[in-house]
Length: 130
Image (cartoon, rainbow, N blue to C red; front, side, top):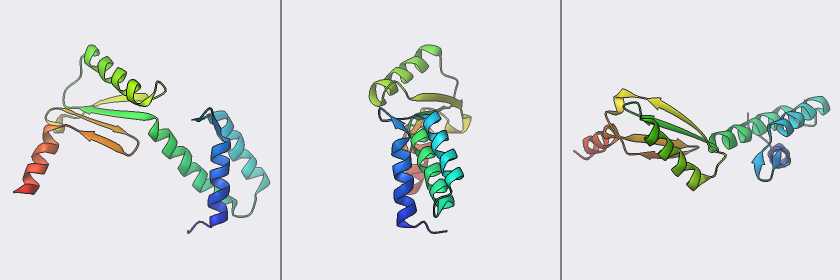
């Protein structure tokens, strides 16, 4: 379903209204979504879908997913978290996952940004070059 310009504009306005000091306020977002459902403005389903997409993207942008081939020791994990907080702000949440198929190194994803320093990635790049 293609979203209309009006529905996109309204969803952006609702999304911006759900921010407090530039950060997503879950309570406000929930209240605004409930208000849209109750009022049922024109194209309200499309507005809610686009609003949900914007909230999901903002939530992903504030979450760091860190993968490593082996479990990280607490000092290394804390150092990585400090570096992420320094670069992206203190409100970034972090999630660590052990993925043995990476062989070695780290892969960090924050929103749509990915930093891949894994051996698996380097082998894939080498394979593509040959």
